[in-house]
Length: 411
Image 1: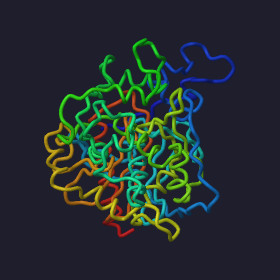
Image 2 (image 1 turned 45 degrees about the horizontal axis):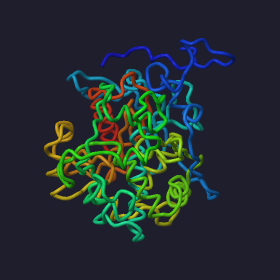
Image 3 (image 1 turned 180 degrees about the vertical axis):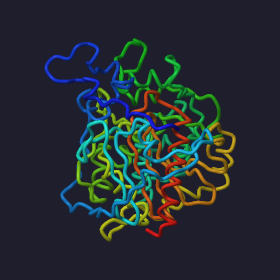
Image 4 (image 1 turned 90 degrees about the horizontal axis):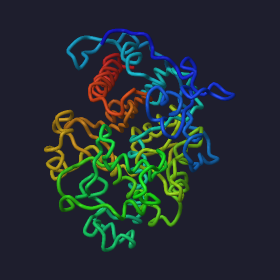
């Protein structure tokens, strides 16, 4: 990966400059996910899509002391076999912000594309890992049961394709639901779903009025409990289950049980559809350091400021899984990227024998947690394409190199 000029910032591109932007510089509901408009939109989503606030609470902010190290020249083997550096990777992969936390200390923190420490950035599917964590907290309290039927939590779904599906199937993406996640296919379910969620203008008159109605109308392609198949809509169903079991709005539950307990400095937010239903699969926005604080809670065995927040058993189960989950994952296309890995509890566990969890979102969002090394890596990006497997591989290679350098240095 050759060193190249940093992609232009939103300001350099003249996006939304104030006053009355010309059409080529106007970020709208129709174009905000597309390049180069996403360079501005991912930091300003509340101005484009309705959001619900996730209150940080009134407790103390978790301190993240600095112990800065220069890792710019850290070298590692790129996916093409050539050697590159961390600085070159950050430049080439449209980075908006990057942070490395090791043993509770910030060793690297960088901001690009006009982003600041107080700027919330869209997480895309890293949101799934936060939503899954909230489910894990509720499971530990006995409010949810992984073996419980989906229709037992959401009675409105009785008599639909969700009959027979269990919460465990939803957590691990193993329902039989028909739902294409092919972003290149404009007719795929994921594109129709974006209209329902309020992420794109509603141009299909046959589209459901709201997210929950859309979920209720989905069909199956196979029995529940089969192979792993990544479908974002399942996390939105999980959000619905969380709301009904918790008898409150998702944003309020997430604030009370997680966000207000990890010592976050800033409120988070989640997009909602026209009926107020949360987009829990990809609609959460947070600041760089606050996502690192969330990751640090995992490193600390689920504790923050001396109190239990996340069940330790949930953390262990998320990366260990079981033989059935690994077998279900083995036949999926993603197994080529993560041989021997699995998908569990809304987390990727990429390595079969290492306690690593990965939250990953389209356009280059990453939360990488190495539990054994006590390391958390956060990367916000605005790739020009939704899914670039080569860039995704570069991310993981870089993260592994960073952790190895910290471990070898005894930092």
